[in-house]
Image 1 (tube, rainbow, N blue to C red):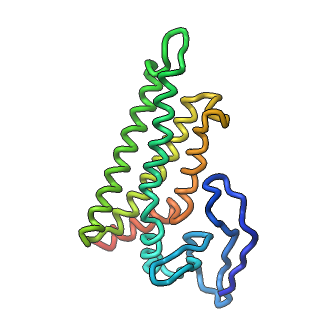
Image 2 (cartoon, one colour; image 1 turned 90 degrees about the vertical axis):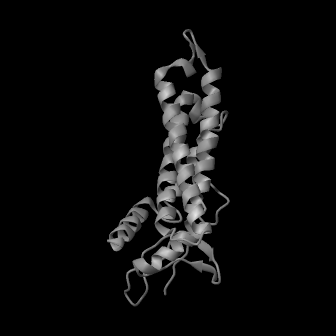
Image 3 (tube, helix red, strand yellow; image 1 turned 135 degrees about the horizontal axis):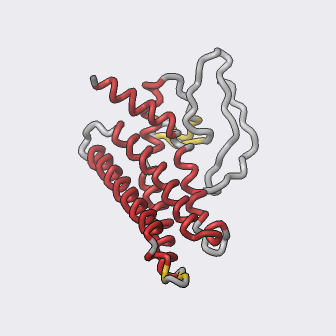
Length: 204
């Protein structure tokens, strides 16, 4: 395996993560499905670059290193929602606080519903895993839904703040930057959709 690694990249968010730039295909010409471009710790294997050549081998690695993403996504989304909710009560116009505007209420309703749904998907996957039952697809589903939900909630939180959401003063955009990585690292949304479909078709 020929691995090409450049200097650590400057990241958009979650800057504490040690990201590297690239992993190349092997000289043998085998096709490599890339999950992460970083070192990850896998139980019993220590620090490894994820470089698995087949879909079936890809699945355990995604489960192992992506299983904590749904909780992260829910927490990030909840933080952004709490800030947005508080801001709607504080921000007033001539017609009263913006929390009374229907369009704002719709965004808050969608956010709270999405967070609740992601939390329940996460609890369901965790319960199956704890009971020793098949939890691979539920884990993938929780990560997929929760990570995409977090981006939407954080984006709406910035929109609710208006121009202030784009500034450092209210710090709400930080949550969007942190959420954005969750649909890329530790199993992209595109890869997870393929894996979920693969497992669903396998059951037939």
